[in-house]
Length: 324
Ligand SMILES: NC(=O)c1ccc[n+]([C@@H]2O[C@H](COP(=O)([O-])OP(=O)(O)OC[C@H]3O[C@@H](n4cnc5c(N)ncnc54)[C@H](OP(=O)(O)O)[C@@H]3O)[C@@H](O)[C@H]2O)c1
Image (cartoon, rainbow, N blue to C red; front, side, top):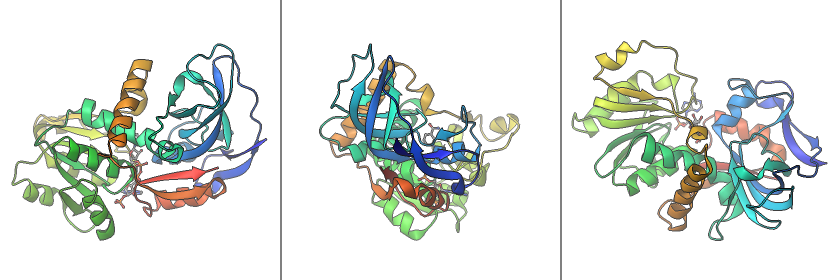
């Protein structure tokens, strides 16, 4: 038996139950991992609350982790016992040990610690596809990123800056705004106090943004659309304040022939070449020191309830991990 955090009935943070679970030997194509760090992501709260349906109940929470391979099942050729690996999007990471399909993991380079890997794969690979594939950010691109001091936000600010963009962010407090400015943002708007649309107009001299990256959702819609130039790209990739409600597609025409998309990581790493290319790009920018991964909160596995309360209560910055 190993320690894990399970949900038996969906709900608030109080449904996260710290208990022992059975982890058997790996079946064909599977490996067993002793986990060193389990990433905490906003998506974990959506599965916990029932916004995103889990395949079955009870389930072990969590979508990201890193650790050491302790056993391999038949037919596994890509990893060996003792190797350091990380993975995303396979529900079941809030646990001291777990089984996982071997083809979902990537090897972690020596230059990156398992703690760092456990907290950066999901957010870092998301930033990789958002800035390079959903919209190609480059020199001089005017970019607006909501929740600039969050897990995605601090990585996205550094990476967009590296690509040469003019990086504008929003943040919930002056302390968060200062942190964002130390992580690539040229301008940070306090969107709880200021009219962020008016501030974007002012900062860009009326040019507005080429792209808006929005993981906040409901609370900043439709204002986010008013931050875009003609034919700009609206990227909603999350629901930290609740999902955006249904809207008429005509609004995209009225506001300047805008493009809008709602991407998710799983569709950008669905094939092995896509997963390898995305992970390698992330490993390269982190190893070079050009993008740093701020793991600003570390919790014991048994404190998962507090970790979710703090994430949903806007009390965290950067990335968070559970240490089994
Ligand atoms: N589609 C994808 O592929 C993908 C992948 C990973 C993550 N995501 C999404 O990206 C977003 C960020 O994820 P994360 O894990 O890095 O979280 P996070 O940004 O560290 O935390 C969410 C932040 O959103 C802001 N926020 C604004 N209104 C909020 C509200 N009503 N309640 C709670 N927070 C609020 C808060 O920052 P302020 O206090 O500064 O406002 C908070 O710190 C989430 O929406 C997540 O679902 C999407």
